[in-house]
Length: 97
Image 1 (cartoon, rainbow, N blue to C red):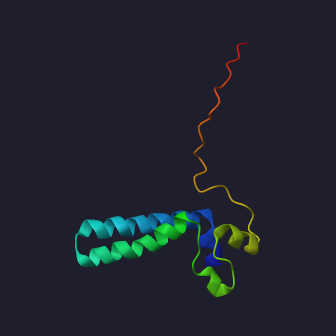
Image 2: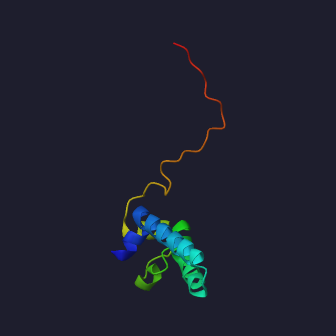
Image 3: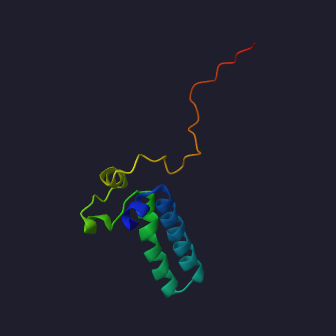
């Protein structure tokens, strides 16, 4: 159940935000302990961005998010950045009615 949540869109965003918070908090502290916290924060940040679930192989499941969701029988999810659309390279035709 935890592995399925981590592979979900919400789980990925949670890992990205948590990792970014650890990195920023660690770097702003300015201490060597803060640098270690920032370094540790890179793990959830990178795995969330790359759609990897490192604990999945411990349960005999694939590590890549897309393959993991398929193995768990979870339907395909919307992309991580669902609201963003690519700009069109073609000009939009103008129609007058």
